[in-house]
Every structure is written in C-alpha cells, then in structure tokens.
Image (cartoon, rainbow, N blue to C red; front, side, top):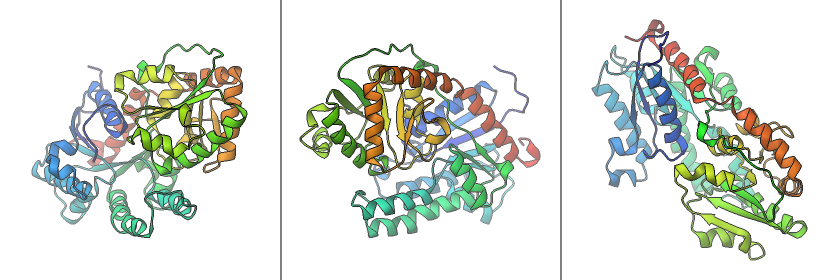
Amino acid sequence: MKENANASMSILMAAGVPRRREGGVAAIIYNLGRELEGMGHQVTYLFYEDLMKDSEIAGRFRDLRFAVRLAQHVRKNPGKYSVVNFHAPTGFAYGVSRKLLPSNGSPPYVMTLHGLEERRLHVMSREAKKGRAWHFSFANRLWHRMYHQPRFYLSIKTADGAHCYSRDVWTLLQLKYNLDSDKVAYIPSGVEERFFLRREYVERKPVRLLYAGTWLDQRGIFYLRDALNRVDVNFPDWTLTIAGAGVSEDNLKSFFGQAITDKIQISPVVPADEMPQLYMDHDIFVFPSLMEGLPSVLLEAMASGMPAITAETCGMVDVVQDGWNGLLVPPANAEALEEAILRMCRCTDLRQRLGKTAQESMRRHKWTESARKLERLFVSALPNGKPR
C-alpha cells in the first residue's frame, strides 16, 4: 500500500446509474476509487441496484427515489464515512437534509458535476426550434425546469466542495453559484493504460469512421447525418460504425437515409475489454456532440492514437487543440463537419500526425493524478482538514 501524507478516510462514492463497470459514470467512479484505495483510503460504492428494487429502478422518479434513499443511508450510519462524494443531482436530498438538520455524525458532501443544465437548456431550446430535438417540446422543457434543474441546483448549492470535468463548469460554479475557488476543482478523467496501443497508419479504403456512445439528439447526430451525406458525393470510400448506441439497427439506418445506409455499420453492445480493439479497427473518431462534460470515449480514442473530430464546446476544448491533436468544428455546423471529415479521409499523413500527438497528449491523463487531486478536495471539505 502506498504511503499517504493524509490520514486514511472512509469515502462513500455514489451516482444514480447502474452498477456495471463497462463505461460511463460507474467506470469513472471505480477507476478513481481504485486509486484512492491504493492511497490508503477505504471506499464504498453505491449505485441504483444497491438501494432500490428492480421495479423501482424502472420507475419514472428513480433518480428522486435514489437520492432520498442515499440520504437515508448516510443518516442511518452516523460516523461511518469521513466524506461522501455524490454525482449530481444525486446529492441534493442529503445536501438539503444536512443543511436543515445538521448533525455531528453527518459527513461533508462533495459534489461531482459532469455538465451544466444551463447549457442543456440553451443548446436544446435552439435545436428544438430547428426541429432537431426529439425530447424537448414545451412539456419536456417545463418538466426539465420544474424537476431536473431544481435537483441540480440544490446539489450544487448544498455542497461543501465541487469536482467538475470541464473548465466551463469550473468557471460557472464560481461565477454563478458563488462557490469559493478553493472548494471547486477541475479534475479531468484519466485513461487506462490498456488503451495505449501501437497503431499503424496505413492508406486503406474504405476509411473507417467511428462514433461510440448513446445515440442522442444532443450529440450532434443530425449534423453528422447531413455531413456524411455530403461527404459521400465527393469521397465515397468510407464507412461509419456506430457502437453502443442503444437504438435498433433499423432506426439507425433509416435515420441516415437510403443513399448511405449501406455504409452504416452497427455494433449494438461492445464489452469493456473489447473497446481498445474497437478503436484500433477504425481510422477516425467522430463525435460532434453539442453538449457534454468530458466524454471518456474521446479520451480513450485519442489514447489509442485515433485522430478525432469533435465540437468546439464543453470539455472537448480542454483536451483537443485544433490542428495539433485533433480537429475542432463549430457545434451544430454540418458544413464544417463535412470539411473536417473530408480532410481526414483524404490525408493519411494528417491522420498520423494528429493521431500520434493525440496519443502523446493523453499520457498526461492518469487516474493516479486525478485521484490525488480529488483526495485534496475531499481533505479541504473536512472539518479542520482532518478526518474524525
């Protein structure tokens, strides 16, 4: 066990997501927790399945129910945890209860925030006006303002410290929510060593593009569709693999239209241990999301040596420098996305230059360093900077 300058802490890490380790928030928590355990701390993990029945997980108010159960769990175990780390909006119930009913046995609460709800409203309201938002009608927006946004607001305002994955969130937490700068930490995710593989950059046809992640309207998919239909006119030697979309193959192919449907390949589920090979089997990573925190798939793809095309917004601009380790395009701009894809497809040397630099830049994203920064944030939230 590594020697640690700080006293050992008992840490509870929780998020309103399934327990699986394959990716997303759960994978981030497990990676950080593993490093914290290696530093001498005890870590407990709680997800949906730990506090709710299957029937409750399927319910509409599962996030609200989970947050209440989580607050009850901490309250029923006074003195068990030195600090709790809840991913927003999961922590709002505990944060509010702690403010209203303070107790010597209630541990400080550090919130983790992936992205801003303000950006979601800003972006998706504009997309709805264009007819490019599936779930952002007036009723959806009202539900969002009355149910989702208040939970995020309370999660932030009741926290003793905040951890975020992008600089824009880091800034807004201080300027809008008035959190002290020493209580807000920008800590990007790390990348596992297994993604750093040796890549051969060869000229081949078709050029293989990859999109990985849930198929959501906020991910810029309408602009990807339009860009690829235009690309096909000038450069027909390409394919696009969509991995882990969570949408049926028929729906995905029909979305792109008949002209290019034969070039769309679907990988519905990719096990975690097969993700490195998925990246190695493709040439260009395309992720034109309109709003994110810091997508893990982007970091993993870059670590594998893939040149990436992504939108110039959110956490993507914290890791991608246009023309150096990837290409940035304005969000919601099919013409710019088309141009970037054509540049990459036509030039193996460009893919090699950007891909090699991308891999090298990802060497700085180590889970050990992320955990050290998170540890310092936890300690700053403790009374007198020390565990009880």
